[in-house]
Every structure is written in C-alpha cells, then in structure tokens.
Image (cartoon, rainbow, N blue to C red; front, side):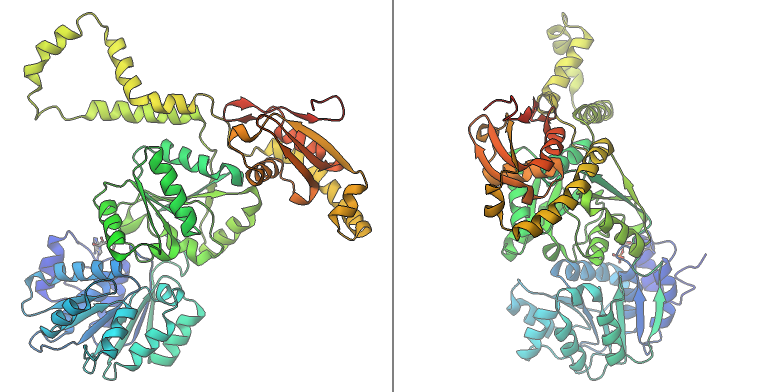
Amino acid sequence: MMTFEGLGIDARLIQATTELGYINPTAIQEQAIPILLSGTNDFIGLAQTGTGKTAAFGLPLLHIIDATAKYPQALVVCPTRELCMQIVKEVELFKKYMTGVSVVAVYGGASIGLQIRDLKRGVQIIVATPGRLIDLIERKAINLEQIKYVVLDEADEMLNMGFQDDIEFILKNTPQRDSTWLFSATMPAEIKKVSKRYMKDPKEVTVGKVNMANKSIDHQYYVTTAHHRYETLKRIIDFNPGIYGIIFTRTKLDAQEISERLTREGYDIDALHGDLTQGQRDKVMGQFREKSLQLLIATDVAARGIDVQGITHVINFELPDDVEIYTHRSGRTGRAGNHGICVSIVHAKEAYKLKQIERINNSQFHKLDIPSGKDVCRKQFFHFMDKLLSTDISHGDYETYVPMLAEKFADISKEEILKRVAAMEFDRFLKYYENSEDLNIRERDRTIKREPNADRNDRSRSRDADRGDSRKEYKGGGGYSRLFVNLGTKDGFFKASFLQFVLDMSDLKKEVLGKIDMKDMNSWIEIDKGSAQQMIRALDGKKYKGRSIRMNDADSGGRR
Ligand code: AMP
C-alpha cells in the first residue's frame, strides 16, 4: 500500500499527518499529490467531499511554498465561510512542524479590518470565499500579484451559487499563476468552460465515478402523502434515537416553520437559512458542531460547504428537483469512509425523480415502510435499555446512597421499578403514538385508486371539451355528488389544508372538486360523480389523529 513517504511529501508534514492518524493516503491523495508537487501542472480532481481532498491539495501546497518569502503565494478559493475555516484548521494542523508558514482565512460576515491586519502580517497561503476576496482586491488590501498556485475547492458548488464571474475575476487577477488546481464533486458544463479558458492541459483525476454518490451512503426513501410529510419526518427522527442529522427543505419558510414546530414538541433542532445574521448563523453552527443540537434544518444555499463530522442522517423533507443538489445534500453524511444514511420523504408521484437520481448517481434507493407508532416506541425502548445498561456508575459516590435507596424501594418489585423508570422516560412517546395512524401509502390503496382514475381521465377529457373547461358552466350541469365527512375545523383544518388532505389521500386532482362546506365537526364536499367512490374508498375507515374517518354520499342516505 502507498505511504505518504512514498509520495515524496516533506517529513515534517508526514510527522503531522501521522499524529492525525493518517496512515495511508486516500485515493485522491495518492493520485493528486505526485502531480501537484511539481507545482507547474494544472489539475482537475473530481472527488466527493469526504474523500480527503483538503489534504490532497493542502499537503502539496505546504510542501512547495517558500516559507522564507513573506508574501502570498497560494490562494485557495472555496464556496463558504464554514469550508474556509475548515480548510484553514486542517492546514494549521498539517503545518504544525513547519516554521515560518502562515495561513489566513478571509470570508464574509467577519471584520474586514481584522482580516486586513492578518494579511499584512505576511502570509503565504490565503483561504478565501469569492465575495470577500473580491472586496479585498477592490480595496487593494490584498496583493495577488505573486500568487503562484490557485486552488478552486468545491468548484461546482461555487458555480451553483453564482460565483462564476467572481472566479473568472480572481483567475484574471492572479497573473503569475503557475498552476491552477480545481476540485469538484461533479463536472458540469460550466466547469469545463472555466478549465478550457483558464487552465493549460490539466491533468484530470477521478476518484470513484463522476456524479456518483458516495458508496458508504445508504439511500432510503419513504412514500407518503404531502399532508403526512411532517408526521413522517417525526417518525423517522423518533425511530432513530441516536440521530445526528441535517434536514433539508426547499424554502426558508419551511425550514423556519418545521424547526419551530419540532422545537415546541421537544426536539433539539434549529434552522439555518439565508435570513440569519452571520452571528446567528455562527451560533447555530457552533451548537450543532458541539452536538448540543441534535438536528439542523437548512435550505440548500444556507447549508453549502457545511462540513460536520459524524452526521448519521441527511433527511430530504422533499426531494430536490436537481440531481446535483441531491448529491450535495447526501454528501454531508457518510464522510471519510463512515457509514451514512440519506433519507427522502417522497410523494407517490415522485418515483420518476428517484429513478433519475439512481441513474445519474449510479446508486440505489431502498424503499422502507414508515415505522408504525409501535415500532417507534419499541425502538425507543431498546435504546433506553441500552443507555440504562451502559450508564457509567463507576465515578459517582453511589455506594453511599445504596442503603437509602434499598430502604426506599424495599416494598417495590424490580419489575415495578423498571416500569416506573420506563414511564418517566416514555410517557410522551406512548401517549403520542397510542393511536397513531399508518402513514404509508399502500400498494393496495394505489391499485384500487388507479382504475377509476384512468377511467375518469377519459371521461373528463371529453367533458372538459364539452364545457370549454369552465367550472361554472359545468357545476350547473349537475354532475356532482355531495360527500359527507366527519372531519371539520375542530380537527385543525382550514379549507386549504382540508382540500390538500382529501386530495392527497385520494390521489385525485383538485379539478374534480366543487364547493366545500366546512363546519366544526363535519364537512360536505362536492365532487365530480365519477370520482366520488374513489374518494370514499380512500378516506372512509382510515384514521386521522387516532379517530376513524367516516365518509359517505350525503345524497344517498348519508348524513347532512
Ligand atoms: P475532506 O474530504 O478533505 O473533507 O476529508 C474528510 C476527512 O478525512 C477529514 O476529517 C480528514 O481529516 C480525513 N482524512 C483525510 N485524509 C485522510 C487519510 N489519509 N487518512 C485518514 N483520514 C483522512
């Protein structure tokens, strides 16, 4: 097996990496380091996050810069402040035994004055985010004249974030560049364009397959209705008591609302989104890193560049439209060879998206049943028992209290003590999940639904043609049934959420519905006659918040 010595790295760097526990180079390190050590080759490294690419460029940079010359020689550009700090932290560790080498991080949201002061101290390596770097260039507070090596890290993310012009500006402002090293998880057309324009005959190294998701990630999905997404999310969290994860949402409003709702329900979670000030963002990230937050909920943009070790789960509250975004999200887990799980909550109609991701990422999804309330309670119970059994009692002065405890519990059996302890811990779960409903969309439900749906489509097409697609005209035609249902505003529904609920449950389109009349306890729904039975079959007898739903045709003997 290849060693760092074998790659020709400076002994002082090897000493530091050995202390960090790096025994053998990773695949990207093994292939990139010999090329990069020359200092004259342009380079493209296609590697996912978590493959050890920071060391793949960090070690050669430290090896080839001139520690005696006190001016900037290397520039690393990366998409986010978090990544920037992470890179500097690693480079600091690598250079532990090298004297006279200085590295500085410049990124937005922090005092530019302090960064200018740091730069003036005579640094050799600058790690920067594009925005702040350009700010410094324009203020003439940074001198890139003598930069010899430019590293573009997570180049695809930078382009995704709209930094294309900034990157070109930076490349144009480094006239003495001997080599450009570009690292990216994917190879979109924009990267090819940048490399064509600014790089000379780059040597390309690919680790794994381009666009291929990390093999150590298990891609799982759960199918439910849009209406049950939140409940499903809670089940997933509750079913994984040791979870340390990031939940992704499409919008900051979702991130904010879900975070608030979960916080109210007792979960350790906070949101990361674009509306936060840098101070708030740092606070959230700090708490998440030190694990005082178990969960982080974030939008894609806000989460870019986040590199936190030990993430057990990435949860897609909704699937992203873009396969690349899925890759970036899932790449937050399963890092450095650890196992990770990427869970997606999907709607039955999104199966095609899963296929697309599977095809492009060359990965495979596993469909899982949404755990029942019982499953969740059982899992929590086992987790608790393990915690109880593995609690360290060697350090406390517990012996002193044993006689007192023994006396207090003298008349209570061991079973009863266990029950009480369990009740203290599980009351919340047991009560919550007592009458919980099945959140899965069953194949059985779907086959029942499919036939009348297809049937309806044919009829509705000719009907739509007849009525010129005008609702009002059609309503007068008397083609509606009125359905009674024992759900109303007391169940927490507003008209819009109720509409969404019945449509999700029945897999019907909103065009089939007419007027909806909601009362406290009951509602009446006008529905296209051809779809009435499908809706009744989908809802009647199902559970909502533990209560059985009753639905029937109000005009054929049903309640009014
Ligand atoms: P990166 O892809 O640079 O974010 O690295 C992912 C993780 O792998 C970091 O925590 C590194 O400290 C770790 N790492 C990098 N190179 C090695 C190596 N050769 N052996 C063991 N761990 C490594």
